[in-house]
Amino acid sequence: MRGPVRSVLRGGLRRAGNSGAPRRAKSSVVAEEAPAVRSRILTLQSMNPNVRAVEYAVRGPIVTKAGEIERELQRGIKKPFDEVIKANIGDAHAMGQQPITFLRQVVALCTYPDLLDSPRFPADAKSRASRILQSCGGYSLGSYSTSQGVACIREDVARYIEKRDGGIPADPDNICLTTGASEGIASILKILVSGEGKSRTGVMIPIPQYPLYSAAISEFDAAQVNYYLDEDNCWALDVNELRRSLYQARAYCNPKVLCIINPGNPTGQVQSKLCIEEVIHFAWEEGLFLLADEVYQDNVYSDGCQFHSFKKVLFEMGPEYSNNVELASFHSTSKGYTGECGYRGGYMEVLNLHPDILTQLVKMLSVRLCPPVSGQAAMDVVVNPPQPHEESYEQFIREKEAVLGNLAQKARVTKELFNQVPGIQCNPLQGAMYAFPRIFIPPRAVEKAKELQMEPDMFYCMQLLEEMGICVVPGSGFGQREGTYHFRMTILPPLEKLKLLLQKVKEFHVRFLDQFS
Image (tube, rainbow, N blue to C red):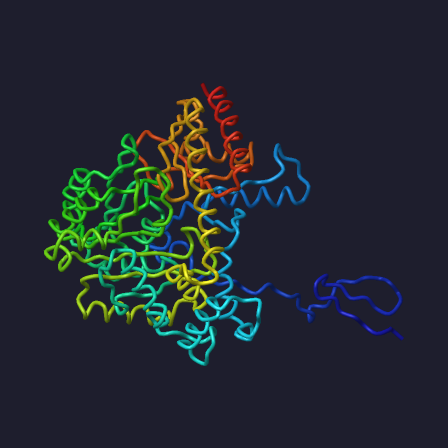
């Protein structure tokens, strides 16, 4: 008798008993067929074209390549360097900056209230944490807040603004806590954008700019209206350039928003009071909504430079301006001396918004429920730090001044060392935390970049990364005048590592010029 039969569907064979004689399977045994794959619903062609148009250079292809190289180093693949130095983004703690003790104490107490009984925490940190928790549902940081943010924190923001601006009143109802300044900027742009064709909203942004602006403009299908900062005059803002940009843009869109970054990112300039007055008058005269990105307001280094808030200058110009110019201004936990990027804390203050529009803004914000409450608590410490009579004051001031003093020193060193390199020119870093040097790229290198379908400064930065392990962002990602090339790098690495980085850039640039001359 024949033994048991086993069918093998994949091979279409049957083996009988122990005879070991393979025979073709009978027709009754049907081979498996791969299931049909239907076409995708979401493709690059069918997706939202506005999202497809978004670009964000700070985390673009150069950073992706840096990640690949890091993984290769971890696998033991030999490179001409031992590590990748990421100078592409203003992430202070990732670069080694230490947290401000008082901020972390308050957030820790809010996160784990049992610590309020611990003698290891100072009384002023405990009092702030208790006050925040009393405004949270269930005395817990894990509960939702109102859409505009925890009430007592908005009150602290208002008091901070009043003190900063010499007593000019601030209303907590005009303040929204946000997920970093970025969410506030995107939210106000979203509510401002409307129309099609020549009626489409135009948004005036500085060139060079922080790529959040161009990305949001693309996403919301607005028209980007460039105005150029004056590189030969330390990246100053010229109202005549604003006027040129505005009048040209009116031929194809409806410009109604003017964005200002002060201190500048990526350019580091700090605007004078006179310049701000001229900008406000221009906005008033031309009927423009002002957006003042002021997240670097604590980062001012150059002698003779001082931060002036747009709100303060607006009120000092008199009621004709302060009662009419619509203004939204922004601040964040991510920059300044705290560098708490990961908490995603921020706020925006709006002025002269019609009550119906403020209602619409809050409605839109309510869709995302609320910003992270831990980030709100961190923002509270930024605006409500220890005072001279409190026990944490001395340590807080010592840590704050150390961070800002260190940044000021690195700003000077960066400018001085860059300007010693043939073919690199760097303006003074008056504020913020970046350098944006101009680099000479020889014509042969420009041609090589075109062959590779790259922007010349992208080619330069990619070569710098692959040969020296230095990750910076090409200036084309921020915008620049035609025929000029730059890159942006942060000055956040520790001083000795920053000097090493600058020395490597010098060695690379000299070799690059020699190679392509």
